[in-house]
Image (tube, rainbow, N blue to C red; front, side, top):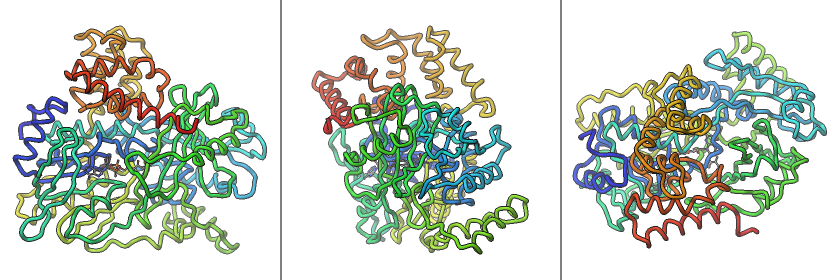
Length: 611
Ligand SMILES: Cc1cc2nc3c(=O)[nH]c(=O)nc-3n(C[C@H](O)[C@H](O)[C@H](O)COP(=O)(O)OP(=O)(O)OC[C@H]3O[C@@H](n4cnc5c(N)ncnc54)[C@H](O)[C@@H]3O)c2cc1C
């Protein structure tokens, strides 16, 4: 495969499809979320011929709809899943090396209330925080700690002081989920992977021996059917996993997955002038936890999970879900008096959870009742662990008896992380099930071992698997030990193009080292009418290098403008559609359709149906 000829651009889309149709690939991945994208990179970097088809925009599924947090603080230790947290802290340290621009450190405050049904007491929070410190793979610059009531109120004056007894402060990381996908795909592209969006798989095809040998798919843009051949087909479709499994008519089984829905609301920070990310329980006796996260002058409120069945592409928000989030937020921040009218925008998503390995379900509440004897055993186990003689597993078993009920890997199914597994069906379809954002590399590495085995069994010469722990994603090829200093150097290139230091910094925070190409573009172009030069350069760059096909792709999965800057986008969205139309040679009907689709999405996100 020629590495240079194809770009990740609309202009090369027909060429990519032609290649996919012409030559069978070694690995055809269905699904362009984080699991598919991470696998595409590792497979292509290991020298395999890789194809990936995504029926929507890349990352349009769960991978752009998450809370965008690594969740490795008090929130996961809430269930004392010690071993899982330990492994995931190590894995997060790896991701910080290969994707340093994607993770941003963020201190999370968990208020502790003395009230019936409280999730944490100061004692249990202190144990959880000290475990968090003990488990950190590197000596952290910040020590997670318990603070007094007074300090909690100084740190976050908006908190409800009634019954407040203190707070836990824990270091966590924000994740730009959709950029993690796009930057994995961009890196995969440089190794020759053939990646196409808006291609929906409709049937899994078989050879004469009944083994999977490709797919029949539908090009949603060109309205045509495609037959794509592959040695191996990998179902990486997250919440759609069982729907896609059903497209394999030789396999009648169902994967052990269930779906949970989560919702997020965005309000202006002026309405809730939050200083710190806050993770709080609801006092509704429902075991649920919520987030309030300050982001770009907005505050994002969020909670998972509710078991869900329904539309997966655009899971609708229900009035009761919105009212619930506003009610519990007002309870913890009583000065805010938030109402539906304060909600500027929203998003919701559905996540796939693997039965029995659902520790990433933050609202999963195992029964933690203990009699006196068990409590003594528990305290003893923690003390022994802290002094280096006890095992984490002992603590976990005492606290989490449900861990014993996990599904056991069989000959077809292997666990590839704490919350994900891969199954190979009798007819040879690979199915990746479950997984959290921060586990994606590890999951892909586990799947690659299976792919290698399977291909070598088919007579493939030995495959040298890439070392994915040192394989940077696009934009992440800089010194991860000096993230701020390195990014500041890149931002300087933007300042040289006349940007304010804040705008230049925002651009490098988004794109890492890829921002350099945007700044270089600024030197070569005129601003499109109604757009700034930076907006224009970003748009052209993302059309040419990131397969932006619609205004929504740009405003949502590539830049997040729609989530955290909708009030501003309203004033330049028409100029954006015009600029896109001109750059891509759209006719007026296409321009109108682009604007209509954007407005419909904005309408849904802004809850006009409830006002
Ligand atoms: C509300 C919410 C909050 C979350 N918060 C966090 C968090 O803070 N931290 C964290 O680590 N994780 C979080 N998660 C979990 C995380 O987002 C998901 O586990 C992860 O994104 C799943 O990635 P995926 O690639 O498996 O699925 P997806 O991202 O959904 O990708 C699957 C893709 O397959 C495509 N597809 C489906 N059918 C077909 C077909 N027939 N043909 C072609 N393509 C197809 C879909 O369009 C989709 O893009 C959250 C999830 C949700 C929903």
